[in-house]
Image (cartoon, rainbow, N blue to C red; front, side, top):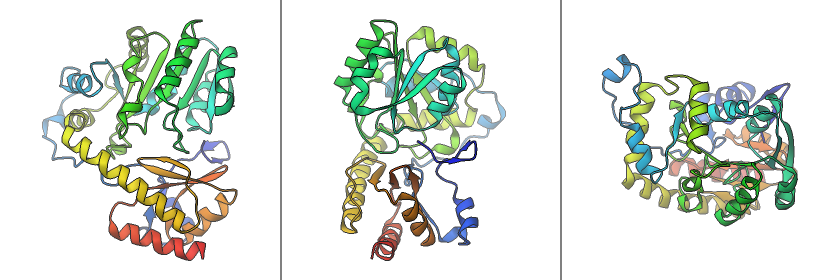
Length: 332
């Protein structure tokens, strides 16, 4: 769920806008608004030829993707956002349920493509499946971090697929906990999984993500998107980032520890965080708007949603200390 400004959806990371609105110079801010890994994969210098040649499908990214995703074919695209926007266009009008709260671009894309869309509470999901053609969720949930176990997702998929339905799982924040993924099941009809290089790897700027589904659907989506959906430099970086298994393991442990530290810090300042994932914590509160403003006045940028705040991770000890100081000021 995203905040709405007139007819436009706003996203995290709008640091220059915040600096302008609150009259605080850019260099003084701590940006915790995105849920992106603040200590992302260290990108090495790129060879000159990746800037001079058109992207090529046989450049090694397909093999790196197969290895990382356990042998499952995926289609690389310009961030999972490209799949979010294009996927609904492949289907005739359907009854679509989106588990709420949710990243609001999903609702916008399915509704804009002419589908009948409703927001569904998690408690009602199992019953709602009976009237839906498509069920969509973010797992871990964005923004709350709530997890639906793989066993439950497989049950939902089985029930939907039995009558030609579809389960769509956006796993943008799952890479630190790959055991929760259902991507390995996507050879079966009726299951689509989206993944991103932007969050766990901290590579949001290269705009590269993946979609996993049965071959027929991936081929249709590739035809709709056309050639060169991911730039050559982005493909070069993605191939090497996916292959860096030592970094994956190290980051998974570090992010889990940082998330636990953040939850403890928030609790020490009377901000209860009952859920979250490796990359952010969720604080439910009816005072989300007021607290967002108070933190921004202290040069800490958060994400405010209906019903709560999402806190991303500080990137170094100085940032942890700044957050602690602003928490003291805001919550005293």
